[in-house]
Length: 233
Image (tube, rainbow, N blue to C red; front, top):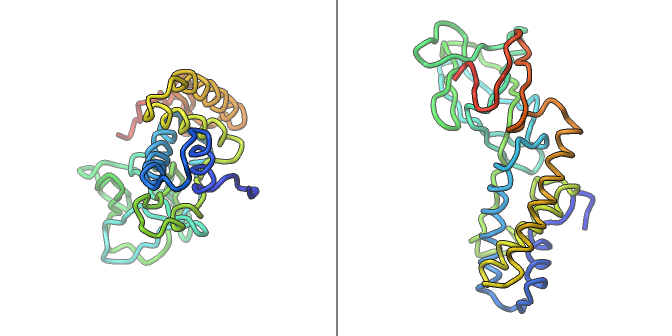
């Protein structure tokens, strides 16, 4: 185990051993790689995790181009961002904060949603430069069906080590359910308890993060930003 926690291969092997499968059971090994990826994506949707909030992500823009994919590389990891998860876009060279608008409202240097993971910056004749973006990212996960198994096993989930126990127990529960194991229900309950504790811990560490039970000020005026409602949508 490294300081970043367990990698996918270690998580997989841990669960294979817990279930009682032989390491040479290649079908179950393949199933576990697929299940870990699906479980990780589902885990990210359980809560507005603070570790998925990134600041100062760089997006290069060039004159004559209006639409851009929200795709970023930070170190060895690749990330994407949903257009509706963008919080702030800055053009620091000119000390500008771009205003988020709908496509039919564009009149000046503004970003607008142009697709699930794309924005349109207007006007397209804006000068070359770099936008700085704050928002909620999602990791680009490794392909569990890659024939080179180490391409999957040697990578690490973005889940911090302090939250990995709940995630691993959750994957165990899914594997037990797949095997029709009588331990599945209890394991699901154990995993849920751990994840709820992690959510509470995450909220205590960073009170800026929204959850389904929270309200927060929008940082601009006196209106409350109600979860599930964004005034610019």
